[in-house]
Image (cartoon, rainbow, N blue to C red; front, side):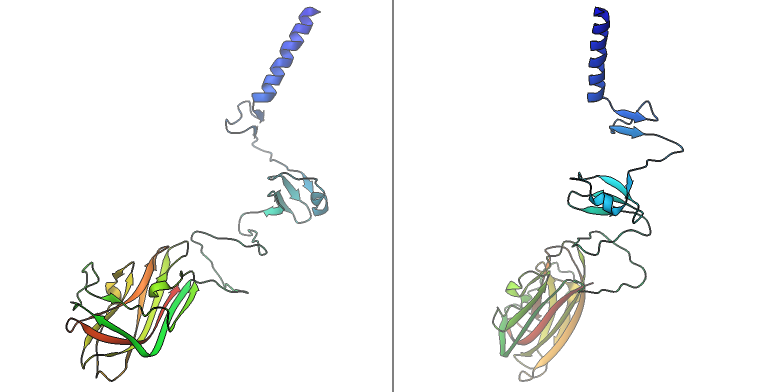
Length: 275
């Protein structure tokens, strides 16, 4: 009798140990080390609980991660801790059309894409206009050569906040006549610049360009020889630039005539449009 009781105690202790620490394998004697439950079969699948939507919604306090098969919709459902969601993959993937989402990484779309709301494309614009213009003296003469690795004595056009307007969609605050890209991923931007001015003397030569992170881009440089000093001149440029998050762009001008050359900026529109 005593031996029977002793054996029973030992067996109970072993059971407690196994239930506390051992993994469970169904169809295998060696469950995977990373799994508490390993179901192995070559000709059968795992069948979760099946119920209709009404029965699903009657489950009291469902745990996050709870999984069922919904026979009303014929889809797997899981509980995310707040609400029931659809679990589906493949060509018929479920698209959530009701909640806000952030989609990262590269995506490829085929067919026709029709937007029923606003399509958010990063864009920033600084525009300036003043009848009397913005006076700017360029201290040093530029060479106009490319590949210098410097701004070649070009200086930023910054008329300040007076008579300046700023439109922002992922482009910072517009202070100091600067467009700062605040998006989360890098992308190409179409930079469009139109501007008007008048020179100090006849046939002054100027060079205009777009600077990225304080460095004028050679691909943006535009050379202009002006007309008479009393005549308003105008021009435009278009530049393609890659901007990473927090990169910034500005409008620069240099002179190719003599030192301390004067120019009056009447207006400009400086626009960056995401592509």
